[in-house]
Amino acid sequence: MAVDEESKKAFLASAIDAAQKAGELIRKGFYQTKHVEHKGVVDLVTETDKACEELIFTQLKQQYPTHKFIGEETTAAFGTTELTDDPTWIVDPLDGTTNFVHGFPFVCVSIGLTIGKTPEVGVVYNPIMNELFTGVRGQGAFLNGNPIKVSSQTELMSSLLATEAGTKRDKITLDASTDRINSLLFKVRSLRMSGSCALNLCGIACGRLDVFFEVGFGGPWDVAGGAVIVREAGGVVFDPSGADFDITAQRVAASNPFVKDAFVDALRDMV
Image (cartoon, rainbow, N blue to C red; front, top):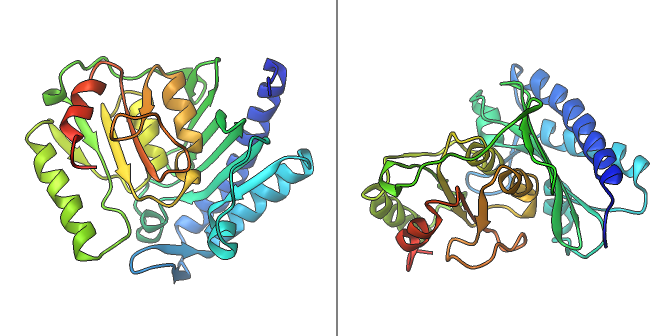
């Protein structure tokens, strides 16, 4: 299904508006006492997560009643939603909930629109740091309206790596995670764990980070917005094995194009 440029502009404007309104809720809640529920051992959800998703979906459904919707909190409550070729809004209303609960400012709203399962529009908004990342397929990537591009780093050894510990705390998962980190620390300059998959992707897009991977994250809502932004900033998004990126696979890697092959080699047999 081809989408004309004017439609994409309208979709982007709708996503930005919804993200900024949800961002207001996050900003207010950030400095207040949180009411926290546990989805898992360390996976948290707050009233703000739910309120933001409801706000975003209500607004976008009014504008695009024929579109489909996948959100983290509704999916958590009602089971997995299958991604089809129809225009589908994929929303993480508050990526970085643990950061939000602890008052650590890496939190964001992530909104992605897929058409034919391809990410076409991405908006990631951090209301605490007032950073709005946007991308539209074929139209470039921007931070607060200014064009961004990935780093020009060519050496993996001089690269800054981001990854995440994930939400599972069983010994097998943790051992695999720490083994990967131990191995990779010999091959990169340093490591960061920001606590937000969407903001890690945006970090690649604007050149703050050189390489990023994560396995076992929540779902497509973590990557739908950021994937567009990375690609439009000249970066590459792929499976950590080096295979093509699958938005539904709960596996993602991203980098600038220069260090991708070395990064895939470093990850080989670990993911």
